[in-house]
Image 1 (cartoon, rainbow, N blue to C red):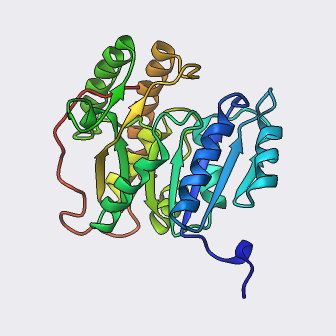
Image 2: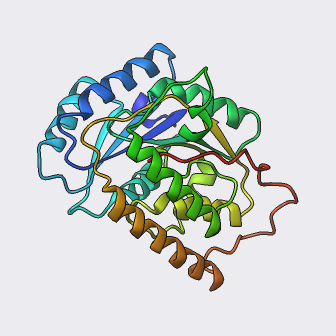
Image 3: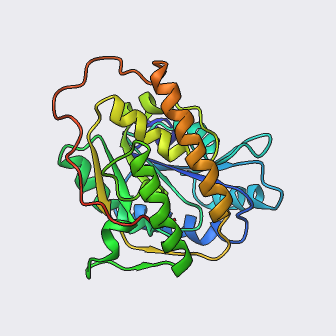
Length: 270
């Protein structure tokens, strides 16, 4: 019998974490419990992005109880995009998910994204916007975050990422080959990495399915709405320039219709 640690897991979960000692353990425990109940082979890679609190020690305590949990430490605070990229590059799972450390999107929503991949998508992205006006879902966000998210989404649409209602939800699932391809060329280290990721996916002809998910705003968010929103929009113009210089060019010509048709445009929520 091959030891579990040498087997290729069905799922890798990447959790970027910066100063998350107080919020992370309940999220990890809920995630491990859910995946064990499903008897789904998995690994959970927590990327400590240069935390100044006891995040690393909290993860190590969890890893002592659950062998699926592994800590990867960055030498300094490099940004969410850099942390996710490092985790994806280390991941071994057939499917690869990144999720936020605050658990705003419950791990149980994974099943919805898995269904999208089973139906032919190359990557499935959680969407608060598609869920916001659907009575079967619950989205709890503070009003000012929703308002600013609406403005941000409108500008993103104008600057080149049309027909994606929510680019910033931190709950995205990939086929392994797609994740490895995309993260091999991404270079944005900050919060705008989602924009770059989806932009490249479009350029390379991957089929993107946006999936409504339940989501609850958690206290202690690291996102500074006005400042980070401005920098993300600025970064999107840089992304377009890099694309114009051929840095995101597909390795092969995408098949016609490879990108999923547009969903209805709805306000995005940070």
